[in-house]
Image 1 (cartoon, one colour):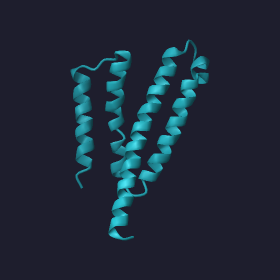
Image 2 (cartoon, rainbow, N blue to C red):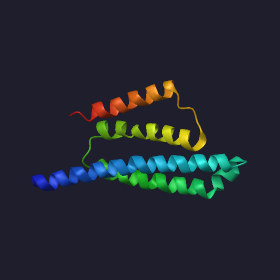
Image 3 (cartoon, helix red, strand yellow):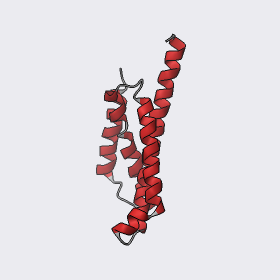
Length: 120
């Protein structure tokens, strides 16, 4: 593969990885929304938001599979932990879940780890 084509393929892989992470966040938010609205576990399972969450997770997995074509799994998989930070911030904004110093410190450590693994 010629150099510009290889660069484009790697760039596409990183776009797919970012899409996988963002879709995973969307899936998690959909599942949490479904859980909050449900009175019983059966109601939660058949809630349309649960189904939407599963579909979003499938799309995230497909994007992740494409990303793995050019990104080593030792970089791609830890990068997915960036979703933890996004979900924690969104959960705080949407449902007033805790986001104090312990959570922020932990998320900063996760973010630092993601940055470090990309230093290759």
